[in-house]
Amino acid sequence: MNRFERRPGAAPRVKICCITTLEEAALAVRYGAAALGLVSDMPSGPGVIPEAQIAAIAAAVPPGVASFLLTSLQQVESIIEQQRRCRVNTLQLCDRLERGSYAELRAALPGIAIVQVIHVSGPDSIEEARTVAPHVDALLLDSGNPKLAVKQLGGTGRTHDWAVSRRIVELAPAPVFLAGGLHAGNVAAAVREVRPFGVDLCSGVRTGGRLDQAKLAAFFDALTTAAEPPAR
Image 1 (cartoon, helix red, strand yellow):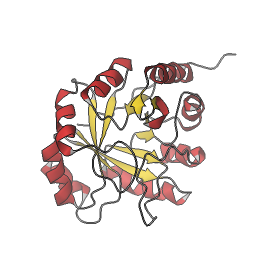
Image 2 (cartoon, one colour):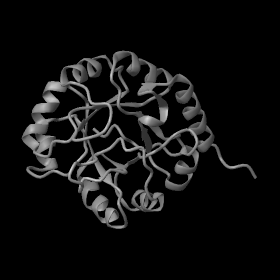
Image 3 (cartoon, helix red, strand yellow):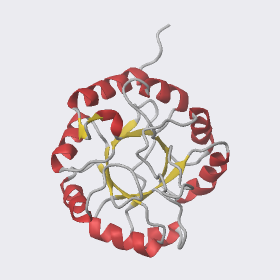
Image 4 (cartoon, helix red, strand yellow):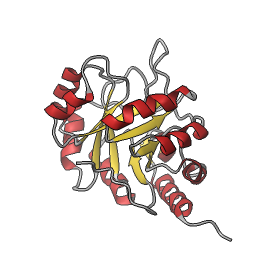
């Protein structure tokens, strides 16, 4: 099952990432989040929580809302074990698989969606996305840098070249989430340029590391505006 079915004319789905508590999860869903990001151990970046906490939040997520496990693991066996501990319905692979295949993940975890992160660094990312897209349920375009000594696998607060992201949306045979530095002030421009299936953000709706209701409201208002046809 692909829970990322495209709906022509619909506003982009919203994934609020770096959820750390049941209260944050409830708040994000109340404002309209279709997916929640739960961050497991990462080499860097915000929002990391213990696996037991991820499992508790995932168990409380209402039907129809996707629970994403952000994982930095690169071996299929370890990813399978982690999903079984955390019990999420979606895997967000923040790095490339080094051992094993997407087919092995699907066979071991039927019904669990797979989302591969592509860290957009330039035109080469287009071919990477096209190669991966047929094997996953969705792509997520972010602004990390896995080539650094301490990998950046998300949560940088940086935008990237949206022209490259737009090209990936046009060419890749999978729904695409756009991440990287999004907030109420730029999401309308991002959506109009990239035309993603969904958008993903963390710091753009937080103050002092906590979800900010005013920023959530402003973000969803801006997203609604972006989905409206331009005035003539």
